[in-house]
Amino acid sequence: MRISALNRILTLIMRLLDRKQSTVPLVAPSCCKPLESDAKGVPLPCASPETQGVSSRVLAEFFEQLRADDTLNMHSVSVLRNGHVLASASFGDWDSTVWRATFSASKSVIALAIGCLWDDGLLRLEDRVLDYFPEENSMLTRVKWRDLTVEDLLTMRSGSSFNELGAVGEADWIKRFWASSSTGKEFRYNSLNTYMLAVLVRRITGDSVCDFLRKRLFDPLGIGEVYWETCPRGIEKGGWGLYMSPCDIAKLGQLVLQRGVWQGERLLSEEWITRAVSRRMEAPAEYGDYDYGYHIWTARDGSRFLFNGMLGQNVMGFWKSGILLVTHAGNNEMFQQSHLFEIAHRTFGGEFSENLPADRVGEQELQRVLTSLHTRYPEPPRGTMIQRLFGVKLNSLPEICYSVDGAVYAANVEEAASVGLLPVSLQAVTNRYTTGISGIRLAVEENTAVLYYREGKREHRLPIGLYAPARTVLNFGGDRYLVSVKGRISSDEEERPVWLLTVYFLETPYTRHIKLTFTGDGVILEQSETPGEDFVKSLTDTAKAELAKQPVVGGAVQKLDLDYVHYKIERLFSPRVKLQKE
Image (cartoon, rainbow, N blue to C red; front, side, top):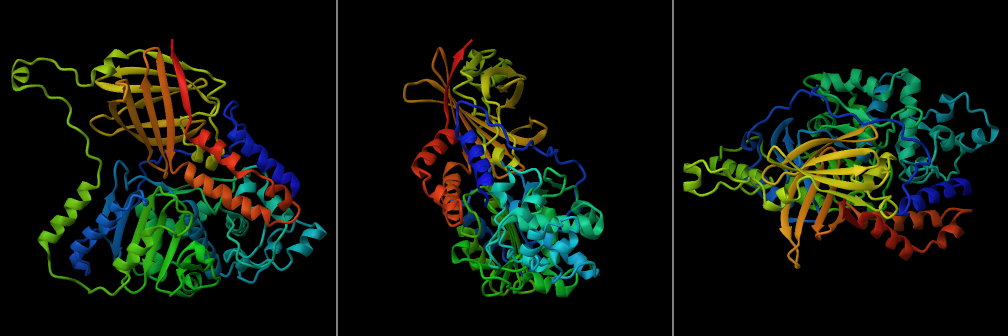
């Protein structure tokens, strides 16, 4: 990595950690995330577990184990066999029907796109990547990258030092990829390898990756609307940024599990699937129990394949049992280190019968477990029988809601310049940062408590679900997010009223937690998020270790005080702001 690139990265990090100033991105956001439309895909068929040879009692126990493990923070899980959905679970307030950010699981989708080109004879694995970039005529570049092949990109062997961290500060990712240094052809996980493959799809077909896949795979599979974030030049990011429903990404996993055949039609050659899921590179042991194929992970014993995205986004296929598992979560997992894999392998790794006798009691138990995974909300006040008999009108909300109806509280802008409603991690991922909270307004509207959260000139409306989930759409500079808001009203040890809000960003792994403590003359606002500071601290430690190994910049990075950085991260992710009543 060049000194100039490192300086840009450090500049952005210091801007983000500075609570007294709003973060200004190094490169303007390149796209705006839409809401999922009504253009849903064709649903997968459902079947009772026993008709597909799986016990309902086994599935019930599997979901119970997932619920019991707090480290997993599961959001949705679907279990399929023979292309049939046996059980689909939504945990808490999450919704398995909403499209989700897939993170690095999108790399496996790019692998399928490359497979289509390979099947059509439009691309060979041994092709030199530079041959697709005739405009790149720098002698140094042509010498440095002369041996880089398509297969090197697929197996993470480019050795390029230009990675996800550097991309946030660059407008031309192709140029920076070629200008970067290379550590040689060893396994080095880097999403910019996938980006370069997405560029190849565009150059070879003349279509965007989404348009190409729409014709080749998405429409034949009955996949609905998808969204893929783009780089500043309008090319799909490839290695991340894909939003796809759990049902639709399950279809891609099922296509792999069926060796490229869908409803009797071959969409991908069996040879490509075999190549893609075969072990090509040995991954470090700390990544988990999988090695690497062509952008698809493969179990070290060859029994499973995996599309894997950070924070718990997975499509896992078991060759022996024919089980497909699709999960979305919001945990601190970077690769395959969570307990999910151990639980899943233990449950689904063996052989299963073609069918089992019907088990009505087992099915009922499974349904009971699935229902119990949802958030249980308290009942609204109903009053006494006499009050109901005489039609006495009752306040449907706690008294504190009415006492602060219309109240406005202002923040010290300088102290809260980096405090915003959008989770900090999501700000960093989307390169779209808050302008800082300027105040809040409280209201009661149609028997619903509402928090208005002001950032600059924009006011976000949050209906608070005290007795049922309250959904709304939030707009952050053009990025629109569907959220569900859960609320609880309590009091602290000083008997001061406290509002506790949980804001689920349903299309992502992220949750925003807000605590409002009413002090009489104002409100103390405290925030946190999940996944949050622990995950970011671990990433910071890893990034420092990696940068320290690089020539030129390693010495400077070694001097970075991690204790100080951790302190700043804590202040960023867990702010406490006093707001004064106006």
